[in-house]
Length: 152
Ligand code: CTP
Ligand code: ZN
Figure 1 (tube, rainbow, N blue to C red):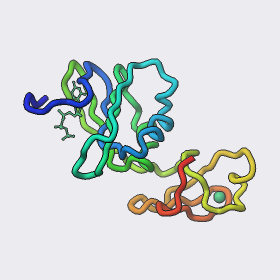
Figure 2: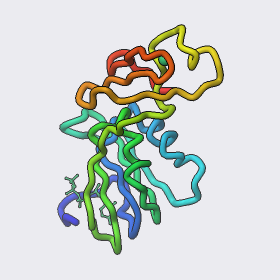
Figure 3: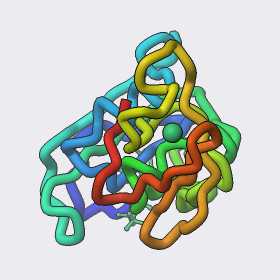
């Protein structure tokens, strides 16, 4: 840790720090990871300054280490997120998120006639492009792109 830099959110002893979350998507990340119903200590800061993102948020979850598969679910709302794995107050590993091959839930299908938009059916997509994210609906085969994507 750098002595010269003041942390806006206190250091943690063990756990996961998710940095570079776009401030506007902080609560979506919390929801996607189910942080609203786990009993770990969680601290977060939002509207922190970031050269890259304008306004960023940071989330620190004590005593929790995520599976890559779970963490990658946030890629749609926090594509530039950086994960720091902390053990004994030290950063022991850094990871980036990767858009998964399949997305279950999280996004809404763009097609108003899609069954997922008028019945209680969880959305399912195959990721057909990861760079400019494009999702192909399992039910209606329509493509939902980054631009017209709505997060549920
Ligand atoms: N951190 C923490 N608790 C610790 C160690 C680090 O909460 N015991 C947090 C820091 O606040 C920072 C992140 O983990 O947000 C990464 O720490 P570090 O690699 O030391 O910071 P930077 O070099 O600024 O990271 P980067 O530039 O890679 O984002
Ligand atoms: Zn559909």
